[in-house]
Length: 312
Image 1: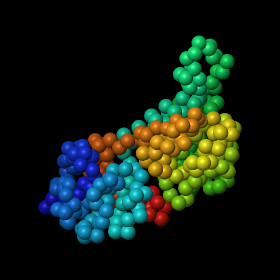
Image 2: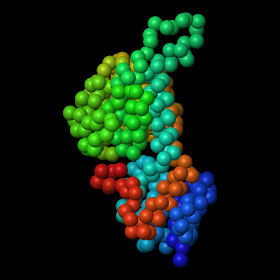
Image 3: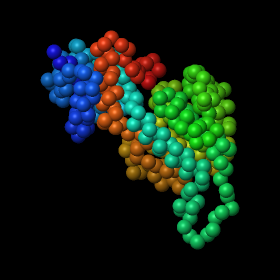
Image 4: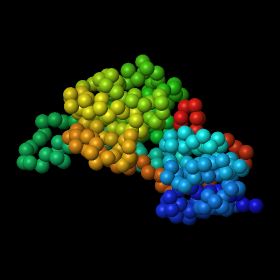
């Protein structure tokens, strides 16, 4: 008998994913009945979840074995009291590669001082400032999970002095890693370009505030493609106005789309990008979904299962 799988996603998203999912299920040798109508999916064993999909009440799925997210972030699912089945976040090779490319681009922009030349096409020959080589530039990464760890390694391979920080100690790797309050202070004190790839949890809310931003060397840069709530909006604006920070690139926000009246849009030292740092790609994400279902059916542990106590 086929395994019932419900895809709970907006119509356009579901239509994009279905052919890729069908190919991935075939590759994993899974006999799947892929269902789009929640009313016809009472026997579903798995729900493929998109935060804007139609399913909000999971009580009607008594056979549910797991909810498999199409997004890396699962904050909007964690608060659902009817979702008691295991919840798995999306870890997608294409998403990771997209984040590496986004972060690398903006790090190089700040490292090379590109804005002075791109924006200064006014006949002035500006060659008085020669950027250091990557080996002399200190980059700090907050969050060393699936995304942060790979971003750190990629920047290290380019020669940057990369250090990382996570809330909990990490196993040894090529990238020096800190943890805890003292570790955060030590990292910030020597970081010229700071990248936040932290998840959005109660413990990370407003982690970058007036006190912690002041720990950075004066004139540092911030890149945040992680979660908007990690940065205190007003503290960031103040740090930019006072010259403590030179510029910030922000890809994630507390409210999305970012409202037109928000001061970030008009601030001369803020670059707003519309949450494009890392998109889930249907082809490779479908492979992750199919692999996880196959593992669960074979009695193996689900990959990327969310620890509800930690929030990610």
